[in-house]
Length: 124
Image 1: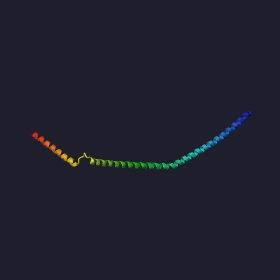
Image 2: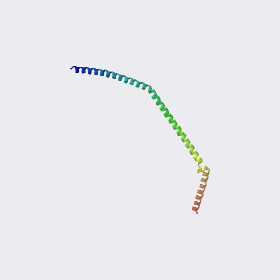
Image 3: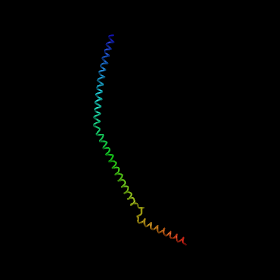
Image 4: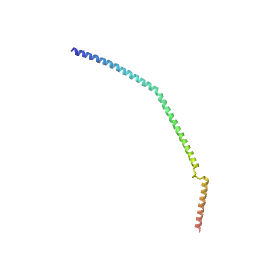
């Protein structure tokens, strides 16, 4: 029995040491978690204004990019308008308005002669 009592005493001492170690480890863990929580809170306080500023910058950049897009579209429209005017002026197949008016007058004279000839033929 003496041997078993010695082993029991030794086992009680080991479990007591393990209990003390467990209590110390849990205390360190709680201290580390508390420090981690404080660091996270401090980081949150420091980054909140930065995040707000980034939001404002994003809004400003979005507005500026919209304005730039509108201006680019306006310039593109003007460039296309100028291109079309240049193409119309430079197109050799297009006749000047005087030639078109002269062709119209000639065609109207021909139609008039045709109608008068038709009416004369009907009267006969």
